Amino acid sequence: KAGVTQTPRYLIKTRGQQVTLSCSPISGHRSVSWYQQTPGQGLQFLFEYFSETQRNKGNFPGRFSGRQFSNSRSEMNVSTLELGDSALYLCASSFGQANTEAFFGQGTRLTVV
Amino acid sequence: KQEVTQIPAALSVPEGENLVLNCSFTDSAIYNLQWFRQDPGKGLTSLLLIQSSQREQTSGRLNASLDKSSGRSTLYIAASQPGDSATYLCAVRNYGGSQGNLIFGKGTKLSVKP
Image (cartoon, rainbow over all chains, first blue to last red; front, side, top):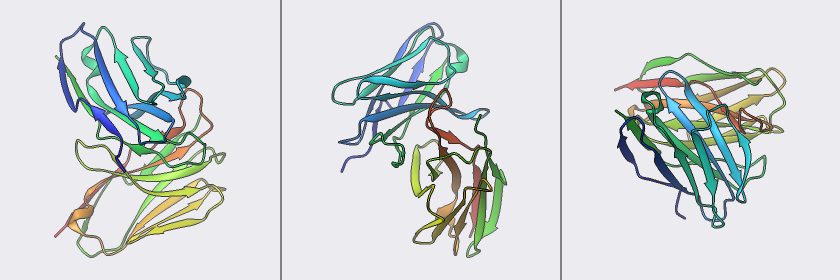
């Protein structure tokens, strides 16, 4: 059974550009959540999607957005990149019920220069 | 607002030692608690999931306990090995909202010396 797949693994972007990250959840999982991980702040929640609907959203500026497709694959977009957006972005998938286990991908390392 | 704390932040032990990692949370209204392992620059690997109605879970050399009323969980690692060196994170599954459905501690960085 394939795990959670995130692409690309590494990205280098310039300030002001925009970027799109992709996450393919485990087959059958309908919930996808995104997290930003930095050394200073740890893991911070960005948003959660379930059956193409945003279910929860963290306290990030509107430059951060996401969506989920009918096959449960999800993308997140960051516009007008800032140096502080450099981080490891992690995607988690689960069945979507409250008591189910979350599985994470390997992450996308974004560096903004 | 749920807050998750992990103590200690870092731990160094000799190979073969048994050890305990601690996790505490402020709001006992959780669905479950999950322990993860993270190697440098990599994603999170799920180790154990404990539902709110359970007291403990075991997998191989790992045993996790949960005391929901006191807001505490421990991860016990028996006979530690150098390959256990990693950062261990605990996360509680909450009721959603702006914190999301998984709230993480900052982790314990474990180093097992041969």
